Amino acid sequence: GGDKDAKAELAALEKCLPHLAEAGMLRSLDLTDEDKAAIRYLSFLTLKPTMYIANVNEDGFENNPYLDQVREIAAKEGSVVVPVCAAVEADIAELDDDERDEFMAELGLEEPGLNRVIRAGYRLLNLQTYFTAGVKEVRAWTIPVGATAPQAAGKIHTDFEKGFIRAQTIAFDDFITYKGEQGAKEAGKMRAEGKDYIVKDGDIMNFLFNV
Image (tube, rainbow, N blue to C red; front, side):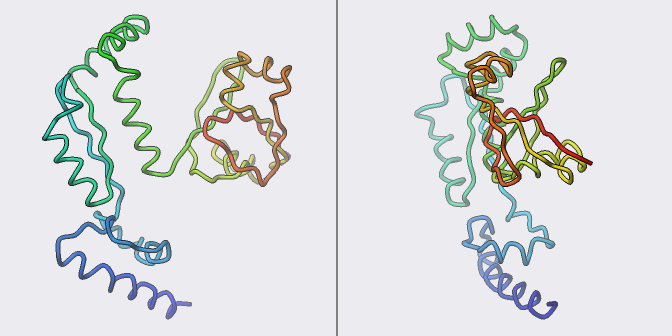
């Protein structure tokens, strides 16, 4: 196995070297998943996903040549750009919910820039969220996109994954529409999902397991 691994690593590095010699970013190089796996232990900085957060003026989200330049650079290296106005974000952070909604409406904003930064970061890292909702608290859990129900359960405790039986699952939109677990259950929107279920972003889940 070692010789095979070494050959895979050499093949990947031979792709990388000319690109790096020209000051290229490895994330813009067309590497296969096998290539990336072979050289992952080297932790190349330019292979890591990158997000540019561009601080712009309140009126600088459109027709902004500086923002266009950042987007051009990002596009060449396969990165993403999220423009925010730090001054507006600072004001939003000091307001209560009602004032914040009114303030954003006046500016034509649908949500704080921080929300867009978080969402872009999740997409960049191929992550999503599921929720557990009890009487006392609701918790969000971060998992990779494509995770199965047992893998999601393992985020809470390894015993949940090892002894997984099934997951009582409600889609996020149904949870909101029917005002919580009880309403969704009465409307027939709670599903029993097995070990092969691929968790959807926003799912509300309750795990049944046996240790």
